[in-house]
Length: 191
Image (cartoon, rainbow, N blue to C red):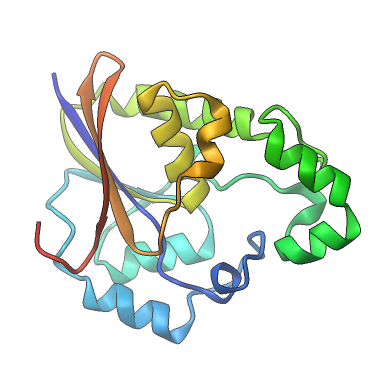
């Protein structure tokens, strides 16, 4: 049985523009327009999920996906860094930020480590692999990164080497825990 999972990053928001750890903000006007312009470019799927963040739910809705909230696809829990920009964290906690960026098992913010995120997303992928056919999930960029790291069997240190632009699709296809990855097709473009 072959499964296909299309992971879609959310459209642009103020938090994404400012490199801010998710603060629960909505899509901005430009992001909403971009998502609405991409209606019809997501292939037909039998199931759709969304990270429980506001911007992912709004992106899913704007794309016309009837997506169910999937708590296991939540973005990385940044603990006390939530709502701060990367620059602000670098000023307040430079050692913690350096440790977090270099050690996948570190969580100096009191939230979740990159390793824990990768493990959580891998568990969800194993569940998704048990269903034949195509599904889509609108998820935070770090969830896309975690899925790619686990699908490729790459080291967790490679997590920071994957850029995930807004409103892009990454497709995983496979069976029995073996995934192939199709990277970064921007929505709104022909296949």
